Image (tube, rainbow, N blue to C red; front, side, top):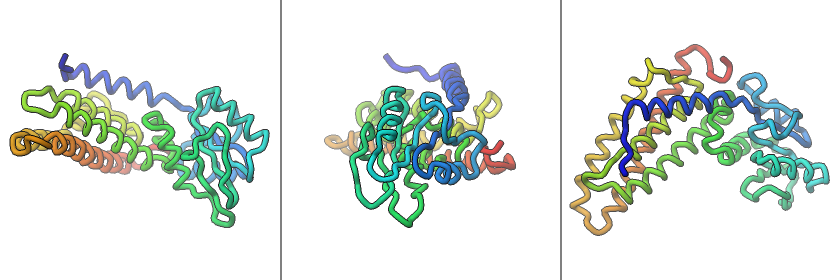
Length: 266
């Protein structure tokens, strides 16, 4: 059954993002040198967006700093986070790579002696762990914003690439692709602290005009590449969504800047 694209569906996505924006759970830092890392992650962010201490179950994500091999206290807190279903990123100080219980190897960031905290790498790892769920926190923490937005663009571009490869044929309903693009743009708006209301929605949706050109191109290549056309069509859907996302990211950054202050500090 084809998905129908109409203003009510789009407005439903806007309301969905409004609810998500109400998530004020902080990034929680704990362990060795936690106050120092808290200060670095919180730079330029909204008050309360990063904290050390407090109940783990009330946090959006936990960043645990390990002072060498994991201690019993480390294991207790990491186990508590796992039970509470709170994403965890471990920062391991020292030069030796050690197993960290309850944490995937891809979620462990090494902090080598004398080099200082690799804040950008930590932020990138946090953004990956949070996925779409990092939108609200990114609006309040500049250190996360670019990483969260890049992840959103890649995620939705891949989704549309798969959809495009499977269904991008003449006469097919493109509503799924367009809805994914709308969701992407609205998520990027939320990550920049830009509220999309009824007055701004038409202006925002106007950014989708470029996508129509990619669809026309896909129809043209269908007959020209009969065997591997699905590969090209998937690539077009991916590239079109990525170009749209990158344009939207730049647009919302400019909107936030023109408002006179970073959205994280409003």
